[in-house]
Image 1 (cartoon, rainbow, N blue to C red):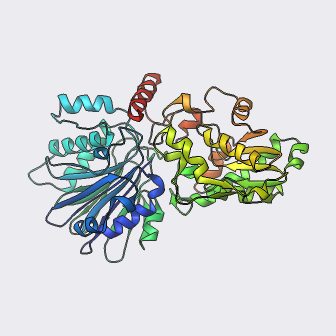
Image 2: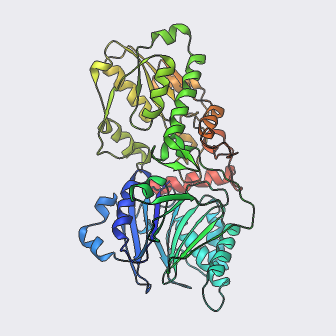
Length: 488
């Protein structure tokens, strides 16, 4: 899913602000971090490496990263490998010095790599689809270049990018000596939000919380297919995509990925999770028998994402809400850790039980979602070891049955516990006494409460219906093979 940020200031050094914004977006990626800054003369300074933001940037490195315009990235690996050479930003020097960060996944990278080599005469050095994207952009700039670089040329180049590239991509780029550019794919799958300060400083980021924490006014979401250009003088111009656009944000942002204090597409993430809890409570009431409902002594969230949904759920069910798990806040988010072996090992390091809250009780555990099932299985066993008599389990999201191809690490159907299994089979696999999933229509309804104007969400991991063309069985098989090799 990754987190991206870009800041253009008239006179202030932006490196510390970018660093602070990346720490706010750290939940979106813990594998690598990077930053590139430039002054008005176009001198580029860049640093990137594997690790958390606080570990990648030392005090000495921060002193060297001075400039009035800059971009940053926290990486969550879904395409390519976990080598630091594939950390972002990426840089090319032709036809101009261009540096770029990207959130999302491209679908037609195989075709684009071939085109870049045969038609555009450009060489790709890594497996990263971001390197493909920056070269497509650079090639389009070269084709549309007039005597001098101007906004019209940039807008036309991004039009070409939209016509050539298929997939999810929210992008922030710097053309050295010219300014900062931001654009979003025509379906608006991954988020991108713009804000400003009274002094003329502009900021673009993956989530509104990054802007708010740095004192920016959140102006709006960048529209699907839209191009935003902020030149070195601080002048801002926007260009709409002339082709077909449709706002189809990823619904999993609201379930898990985004921070609860963010607002994406005018939908407050916290409020959407409250609604998910209310809908899930109704599903639990309609699924469990009266005896089973009466059997439940306490409701417990699995920290942290599900806490918001659990509060209204406990009220609707008229059940006592208890904290039965304590989270070690110095362990990263289990779901986005690279590699299944690391993910399996981290669960017991991440959570511990308050045994007195489980002893001789029938508990209803609430989680935001169930992906591979390993975490759920271990948590249920932890509850039993702590003394729980029965463990009911409910998910605020529907069964995840299909790969996500737009920037979330769900590429293998074999790893998804809900793929090819019934709810009863999943229940038996994770060791619960009863398992209840949110219905997809209810999840959509919960999120749409914040903005009824959105007619479609990307729900592909639940429904198997993909927003873009090109996602067929052959593509999914190749994706699994590629990701399997990169994890070896």
